Length: 222
Length: 252
Image (tube, rainbow over all chains, first blue to last red; front, side, top):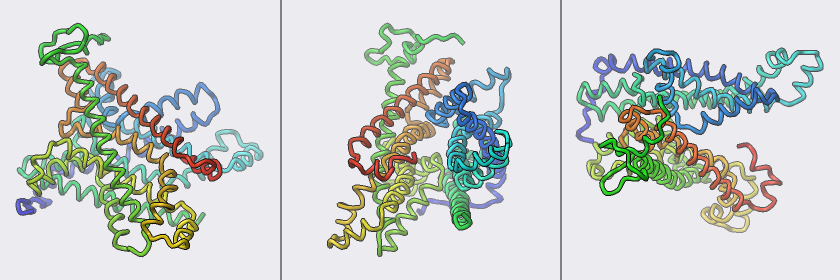
């Protein structure tokens, strides 16, 4: 390990490069999680609606997204969005749209499993009280389903956060890019990648431990 | 954007269209190139899958050992380490950082380093599946093995692992499909696999749509083929009556 220069690990040196990327990684994670859950819930409700003209396109969308590597989806969207809206879009904006569209497919599977885990009697009870489909979903099914799904959502969010590093493919400036740029500009690429790995590990490990705690708590209540 | 599929018959440097679409001698068409890229994707994916299964099985088993807290800790540390660092960062670690620390590794072909990176990354997920597979077995199985005087290795070899491995086939199927998709990250260190091909050829020909489409279809075909093979293995190895009785096949 003699040739590693640890004096590189100095925030005042690398901070200017990394901070901007760090903020984008976090922002992308939050926006893609919220957007993915909203769109994913719509997709799940379409698939569970029992109406073929709603279920079929949703199923096709989810299966397509899940059979393509995220990197390819990023490349596709980066290529096609400018055609669709008629003007070029920055890599960062393109990444946000891609992540929402891509993660929605994965979140919709979680939501679907969550809704299906609610006993049928709950739906019948809601119907017996004279609730409409919308009221039944909003007041009876989804609140319970989302509570059950919370740990899985958070686990998926950790995976999502790790995946944000893949915006490398279209050149968006995220945390990894920040470390890479710092490493290149300061002539210490090896140390930069090492430090990036440590930071990602600490964040993901802390988050996954927190999810584990939450899971235990929810299990006791249940 | 014209839909011109002849592009795949073009020679990659001269741009001439070659009849028969396959270049001869030193010539290479885009069709030649995409097929070799597909071969690279499969090489990386299956190499990594083999490594992931071996390491994942080992580490997952270690985590369930009775009376060996340090081996349990080793298995857990392995899993947490390789699960909590993004794959792209791990590939950079193996490609840039590890050879800098151990100069001996500088002579290795870079594809080996990528296979190790993807293999270890996936081994953490496999280890998690194997551990939970072993732990879902009824406790009585372990006790029964102890009661007939099996040693710990015998207990695992003859009682626990044969059932646990069948249980983990469905989750391993999705991991095997994931590994094909995840092999795309190898583009970042210039392995000439499908995603790398898509980026390069899309830029060279200015017809990225055809290139992306072809690559996307090849990924889908590969993942689907893996799915079928795993389904076949699952049916062949099924213990008659077990799945139906326990409903173990579900949940995937």
